[in-house]
Length: 208
Image (cartoon, rainbow, N blue to C red; front, side, top):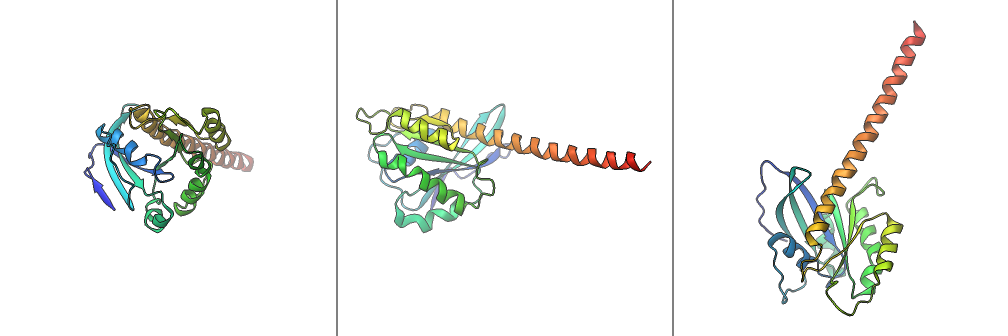
């Protein structure tokens, strides 16, 4: 594991974001484009796990994103899975030039939910990135990706780390998903609390 830019802003809120997907779909390139706005044509496959930090502002609040880039090869599974725990969001990534990488998203999602020990799978904030839209010859039609995301209730963004297409938008959307999920949970908890209070009042009035 290696980490760079590991200092966090004391006035920001830390969010752990995990990038998952097959090897070669461009997870490292997406992370580097987002954090440093650079693209390396000679980048190599990630070995194990790496992470970078970046501060962003969403809805007037500052967040420090701790972005974890995990190796996609099966032989690195034991190295990457311990880092799923405590994640606030997961970016499932495939390459639009690789149909298999789209089909494997279900396996990546299942692996993440299991090792991250997610209790409410339907509520966890996933975002899907279809990377490499700059490539002329694509195996995955946009409709196929949209259909998978619709079936899994996950937002979809077509990205290009090379041409900086939708990269910032996708990471900001991930934070917005976290905020949306927390707001939903808060409302549910408030409704339960109100229901309990109402039942207590009804009991008291019945006794008098």
